[in-house]
Image 1 (spheres, rainbow, N blue to C red):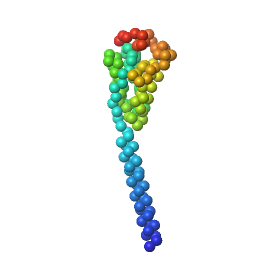
Image 2 (tube, rainbow, N blue to C red):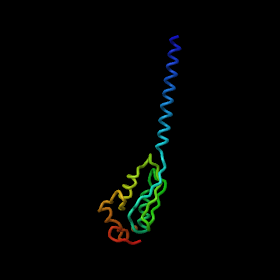
Image 3 (cartoon, rainbow, N blue to C red):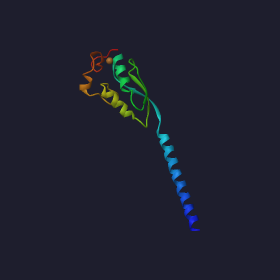
Image 4 (cartoon, helix red, strand yellow):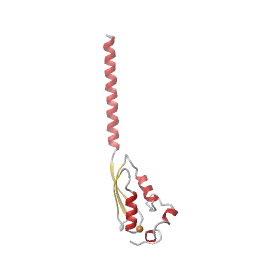
Length: 123
Ligand SMILES: [Cu+2]
């Protein structure tokens, strides 16, 4: 009789654990989302395009295409691996301002002359 009760208790425990694990995996699956965003990134030329897109060859980022004319960056990323703010910071770290994060002056001033978008606006 006592043994049976123990077995029952054990089965119940197992059921609860399975329930917790399945809830957890469902929620982590829901958090792993592919997001497509459009970010304003300041720059001038094809060298800028290459610099921005190369910097975004990064874990969690699936696609990054910057338009030299509209200054819009199309980025596809996995929000469980990287945040949008981190993407802004990567872009700023190579010398390009975004609508959220500004590049440091010393990084900006080390860019080639044709890329100095704050001082000259040309394509
Ligand atoms: Cu450039």
